[in-house]
Image (cartoon, rainbow, N blue to C red; front, side, top):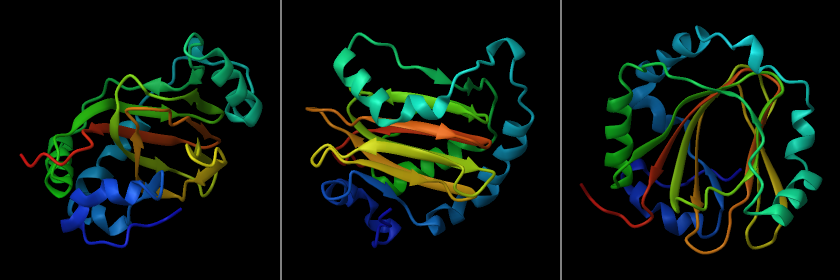
Length: 207
C-alpha cells in the first residue's frame, strides 16, 4: 500500500497521486492533531450491541472473492450489495473537529457518508461501486487485530484485484469514485473493525 510522500499542507494535490495509485493509505502521523478525539470514539463503538436477529450464517469471505465480483459485474446495476454490518446511530463527540481538520488539509468541503460502521467477525460489505456519488472517499478505520480485516478493490486500469490488509489500530485511506467508469471495492473483517467515512469533491475548493 503506497504511503503519500508529501506534507499534510500539500494534501489538496491528492488527485494527482490518485492518478497513479487507486487507493492510498495516508501516513499515520496525519492523525496526530486529532488523536485524542478519535481515541475517544473507541469506547463508543465498543458499547454498541449487535442485534441477535441480524446475525446471519454465510461465508462473508466468499462474498468478497473473485467469483462474487464477476457475479456483481454481470448483474450490475440490478443486484443489491450483500452486507453484514451494523450502521451506528451513536454520537461521536469531537467528530466535527476532525471534519474541520480534514477539510482544512485537503482544501475541500467534506460530507459524512457513514456515521459509524461496525464490522463484527465475518462482517463484510460485498462488491460495489458507489458510482451514484463520484468524488473522493476518505475512510477512518480501526481494527482490533493485525491483518484480520481488509479493503479489497479491482484496479480500474489493470483489472487486478488488490487486497489492503488492516494493521491493528487506526488507519486513514483515500480513494476516488470516478465520474466515468467504476471503482469496484469491498470490505471483509474477521475481527472487530470500525469505520467512519466521508465524501469530498475531486476538485479543490478552498473554503
